[in-house]
Amino acid sequence: MIKKFMALLLSSISFYSAATVELTEELSLSGFGSTSLTKSDNSTPLIINRGIADETCWDCDTTFGIQLDYFKDAFKASAQLVKRPQDEWSEPELEWAYIGYNIGELEIRAGRLRLPVFLASEYYYVGHAYNYARPPVELYNSILGITAYNGVNLVWNTVLFDEYQLSVTPFIALSETNKVDATKALDIELDIDRMSGINFALSGEYYRWNLSYFSADFDQTLKFTNARRSPPSFELSFPNDHIELFSLGAEYEFDALLLTAERQIANLRSTWYASAAYKLDKFVPYIQYGENRAKKTSITTYDGKSGSSLVVGLRYDLLYNVSLNLEWQHFKSFGGDRGSFVEPPNQDNTEAKLYTLMLNFVF
Image 1 (cartoon, rainbow, N blue to C red):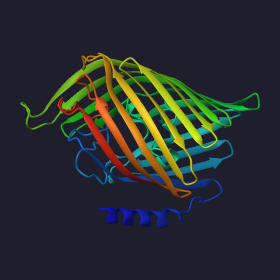
Image 2: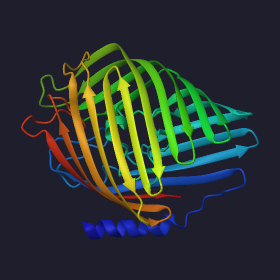
Image 3: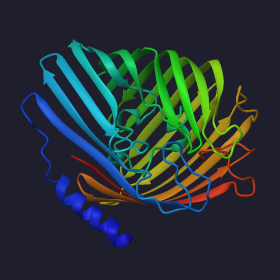
Image 4: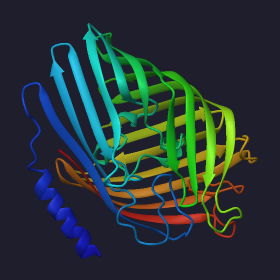
């Protein structure tokens, strides 16, 4: 298996390092991807939209995206098509497709847009853009992995005191339906009636701050398809649900040391994580710890610490656009809640160790 993975790794390096980017003066093509070898020691699947269990998996993290950007004076158009970890190769997702127009410091965008909530939201699927193998699952899966919306936003970019870059992005979404394949036996359907929010991003020479707020009204339907149940297929509906979320994150760089932390407070679930990474030439060792807390809802009755995870890993930059991660992660759930498992694990085995070897590239 290791020989198979290394052969795939070497072929990817040779292809993507020679890829073409600029098509014309106004049009450019770029792309990114990730593939991994993963295994857990717990039979209960881990991480929404990945479902990593105790069998060796070659495609639980597989991601590939291409992006086309067009610029002409004040006009901009951009589209990004992504085969996400949960997608079949024949059914990729249009992550964004929008048009924009600049008026001074303002940019108006309309179409399918990325949901601007967390520090890494804009490049969530670009594994080469962050040090760890995956964005911290406590935050980035806290809204079931939903990363995009159909609607409009207004981006105001300005410079403060000739030193700080401030970006303010209010947004509003149209009604839409999102489907999540939570497990082999459970699909979750979210019918969003209204969603709006605002994001503030402040950056300096050695740091970034991110503050977000958004709220949404939605109807939730759980579709069970387990043949062992009686009846074998049924649905549970939870209409008129509401989510309200505040998120604060910061990233500081001290020479070779990078410190990152984010905190999210919501009416359904609250989470946080902190990480440290140290760059040693082409090597970046890192450590990360995160927790989530569940709150009583129409579906759950537990209120308290529901899960935690500890990550220790090493990133190696093979080329400027190709990186490799070797990572160990420990998960634990509490109080009968699922934590970062896809579903509540057997109460006799509420911990899991996850091993990952991941390749990331961009072009």
